[in-house]
Length: 242
Image (cartoon, rainbow, N blue to C red; front, side, top):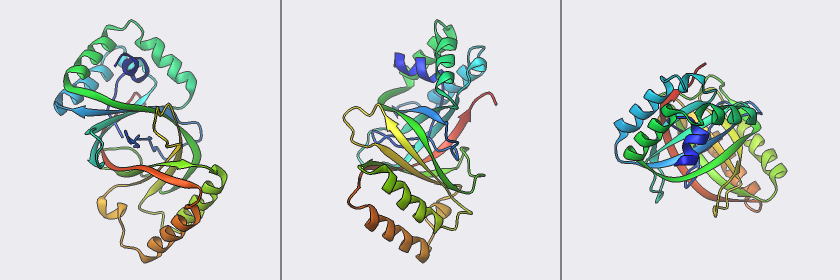
């Protein structure tokens, strides 16, 4: 939990999981961040901890954006929520660490989170600069995401296949992003792909053309990628200073 406060500087969630969630801001190429998965016993306590931190003098100096998410479906993963902490550069991570170092506000946040939730896993993610769809679909309450962790043996071939797939989608009611994962421990996932929409109906459209394109994608990457985990989550709140 000490690493959480050092890197987070406070937040609430969204995407991949113990099962890692990668964030999916309609992603500029330089986006970088961390995702922390929790088993939450007191949801109101988590919201209160994040709200109090971001309203504090320390939180007002933090350059990060934090997204709180609730897991809708994640198999046997014990986490119920996640917090994605997003930066526009690695230099901002150092800035946030400096802001939190020795801060009483940060210590209070850490104590409050420790009482309300148990950390189950964590990971670092980098945008691969590969995104598509509607750029207006951004993190916010009610946005749903399918986050799939994958182990890829040929990233260039996978990107080509993924872009062919997303080009076949309508693109007006969803947004997709590809992320590179790091710090995964024993997990085998190297990347995460996300598809986000502002409703469940838009996340799972009954579209024969899209289903055919997905079947073609699966066939084309079957020898170069393995699905390691998949989850669906919904954004609850976004914290930041912009």
